[in-house]
Length: 233
Image (cartoon, rainbow, N blue to C red; front, side):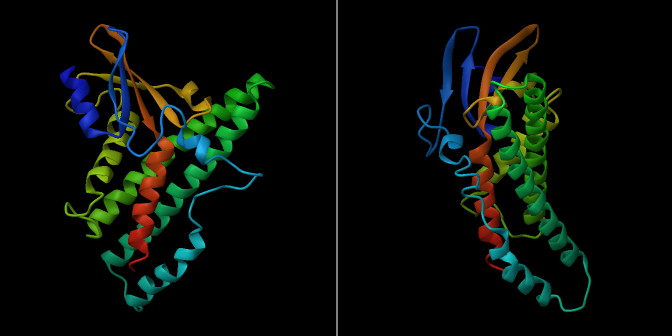
């Protein structure tokens, strides 16, 4: 396997890679998912207009209140970092909620107004980028607050989520320590699955590889990790 691609797979939440030069799949790891038969989107789309599966944020309010009460009336840097975590988790949550709303609307518009479909697809992209951005900030904060460390069973996943944001989303034009350009495909968000298709360019080779991440699975897994931490407050 190409050494740069191997490094990218090891660092991020990529679940599949296709080598377009050879016309074959060179990596697949779907974890607990039942790909390619059923995507995370197919299991967790809207039902009768209501969202499934995202946690009810209200059930975490008693835990947050316990945390604020533990500080009394004193302000310090730790308390402020918990406030940042509180805000970042909500932004992570609502970015994904909006992603789902826009994705569903985009799919429903596929046979209708093409200009509206394009706009909804672009809004889905904005929400996706926000979800990874705020998710990484949550991870940075729970590390700073020593709520997670290398002994935690999900340490590997949170590290790979962060690098997915870094390598595939934020610094994709010049990913650190990789001689690649990484090009997320906005149009893959309009598909009725939960995979983001990513075109990977090597020096003088356009789209040498296609890679895929399951942004639904990434969200739900990180949401559970952070919610479980909040429940310990």
